[in-house]
Length: 228
Image (cartoon, rainbow, N blue to C red; front, side, top):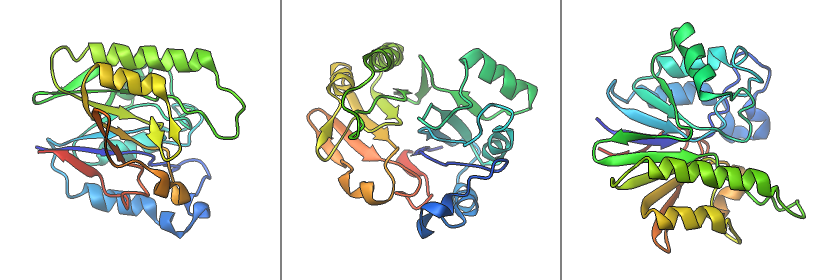
């Protein structure tokens, strides 16, 4: 049994959204994902750190979910900025049940346990460089969601999973980082960064928290093993 993380699968098995337009690094990425996951065992757990499907609603994303469901192991998914299909947790769980999808769980205002560890997370927030400001309401909502997830961990050691990076070269989101440090998060795994922005990723311990980028193209479409 092992715990893995990977983000930004950007699946588009129904919609016309080929990822290789973003560079040769994305060529044949669905097959590469399937091949990499084939090495996992049925009892393994993989956290998918957002931007899972390009579908604009649950029905349009169904084939992407079925693809994920066929991959070995349990999958825990959180929201990314391109997950337009995302809905209430109750509606998503009902949809998965109705469609016979059995290996996908939702990380949203809650946490899951893996051995002695709590798996917590949310989408996070990101001060985009081209913006002159930021949406304070959305930021505050994400901070509250992260806090709810972290509080659900109780006294267990915490691993956090975000879509947006809480920091990278030349950038910090102090509100998110503060929550990670207040709750003594051991390590934070994040996605969102692609291509040339990989070089700005933070890898390693900053302050009290370790950080790792797990975008699919950064990992070569091979899930990152976190724990045995």
